[in-house]
Image (cartoon, rainbow, N blue to C red; front, side, top):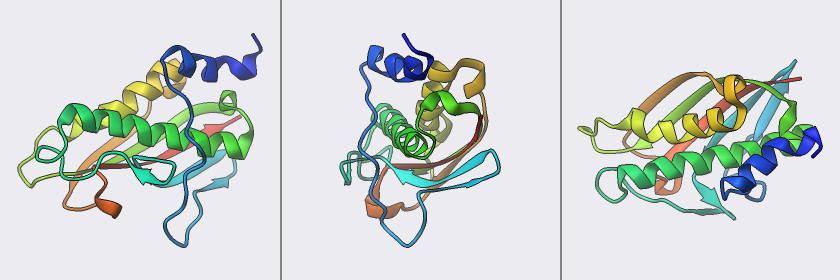
Length: 156
């Protein structure tokens, strides 16, 4: 097995694949590289341009489903990174993850939802995947998405 295939093989062994490059929904770049850091724009839980998990977490979407929505956001980020640098093996370190959860004012499990993204990053990258993080509950997200995340990574 070549080193360049390791992360994607790990994804496959987990039953996961990278989705197609996510479609933009506004006038912005999906990511911008500055030096060795890639700053990824917010990505909702989409597959093929369609939001998979819609509505308020704790009402329309369960905490467990929202956890998987956060994982889907991360897979979309990884698709963007791969398109920029050619291989996920080029990720030296995950620096920061910010997660937004569309939820009721009294919803208290926002960190559990964003663990879906954090857990996937650490499962795939080990120590390189450990990151600083912010998990925020919000009253609305684009397209009524349940979860959106943004990410900063350092590449080799």
